[in-house]
Image (tube, rainbow, N blue to C red; front, top):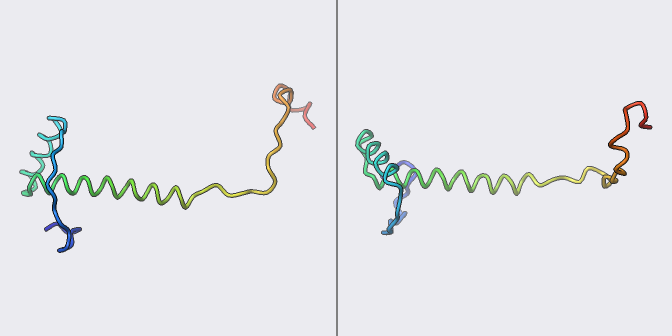
Length: 87
């Protein structure tokens, strides 16, 4: 059982189509690390989904704050003025 697993986590069967090269790399990693291909896929999916969930949670926390009055739109002409012409 992996470190992050709890005894109550159930496994389900599913069928996936993945790139052949990715499968070969994952199989090589499983042999090198002495774990099953299932373990490699589970860990990879857990890491990916954890990162995605953290990004979503972080984006909800970092909503823009109101910083006073609304910015007034500048007339187009002001963009073409030289610094010394702006008052």
